[in-house]
Amino acid sequence: MPSETALAFANTHQSKFLQHLKELIAIPSISTDPDHKTDMQHAAEWLQKRLLDIGMTRSEIYQTPGHPIVYSECLAAGPQKPTVLIYGHYDVQPPDPLDLWSTPPFSPTIEQDYLIARGASDMKGQILVSMSAVESVLAQKEFPLNIKWILEGEEEIGSIHLPEFIQEHRDLLACDVILNPDAGMIAPDVPTIVYALRGLAYFELRVYGPDHDLHSGMFGGVIHNPAIVLAEQIARLHDEQGRIAIPGFYDRVRELSAEERQALALLPMDEAYYLRQTGAPALYGEAGYSPAEQVGGRPSLDVNGLYAGFIGQGSKTIIPAYAMAKISMRTVPDQDPQEIHQLFRTHLQHTMPPTVRWELTMLGGGAASISDLHHPAVTAFAKAMRTVWGKDPVFKREGGSIPITGDFQRILGAESVLTGFGLPGDNIHSPNEHLHLPTWSKGIQAIIHFLYEYAIG
Image (cartoon, rainbow, N blue to C red; front, top):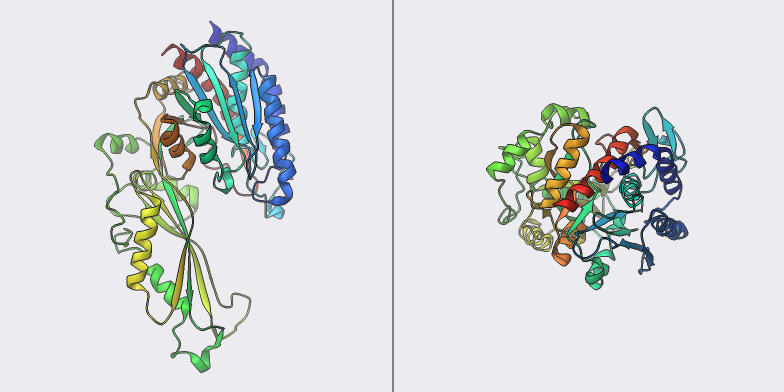
């Protein structure tokens, strides 16, 4: 059978696949740093060439006002066969702080079963999982389906130019389903399919008082302290039940169905799981929902950063001229980030005292997404995972955001299969990011099985 020979090919080429992953990881493609613009172009060119090497018949680089987008295709199976569009991003987070790395971040190092490097898990490792699987299939010279690729270089800075590219190239990107391996697994022995993602609305709130810092002895009690005002505003954002206290915030929140709550209850993500992952002394959250339901199916609001006045060592008795907070809100399907922005602004208009002035800036956002659990591609991927792991996958709602999933759904009208072979402890975005190589190898097998399963319907 073609699938068996493809699996055999993958098994005998593991060292080559790993070498290609190391080559890509060694390119410091840090999208947020202008000093790495040349590296971004280098990474795009590496991917363009590699896609041709594995058997794709077309591979092109499209320049954007930011970083390049790589498109590739092999349509040899013909129009009667389904088309899978594979998504990935080749940009990575900055490696700072460098002194916390045990090995140089762009010198991939293997220690026991782990490959340590920036981008090893998020998501160069996931791109190479997909690429290695497709290479194994194309090497058989039988094409069970059509493959397209879209690889961007701006995911870590908000996929700034990708939605416009998708809109302008709808015909080029037309497909039956999108394979997006930018999610992940709960544990090495728990194959996972993600069917929903939370969205994001990100804000900066500034509160201004006097036009310069003041002596707190001379003016304390007379001038309203912006840091206190900001702290009071933040304290009002949740009620005693852990619910977000912005009027109208929950008006569009879709309740979890009985089927979903039953599926989420099967996840090995109870209170003990989150305590192990975080080191927190206890959990916090909205009353009436399990941890898995809160993270995947309910919205949240968090303060990501605070600044006010003197924060150095020692003492300095001032009333600061301003205070600032970075605030993010994770949204769920049917919530509109722009509507959330307006609700937040209206809330502040009613609660801010007249003793200060304030500014609210929306720094970014993206809609939540939810996929059809019964889509043929989801069924095919579940069967593929069952074959490789010997057990049914779990279906998970992810707490994080991949806004491009909603853009694909909205612009191309195509569902996504969200998966990936990274693990919660991979330290993505942190020092010593790493990839569990045995799970990575199983991922290659799973995608091979998926491509054949989906092709036969």
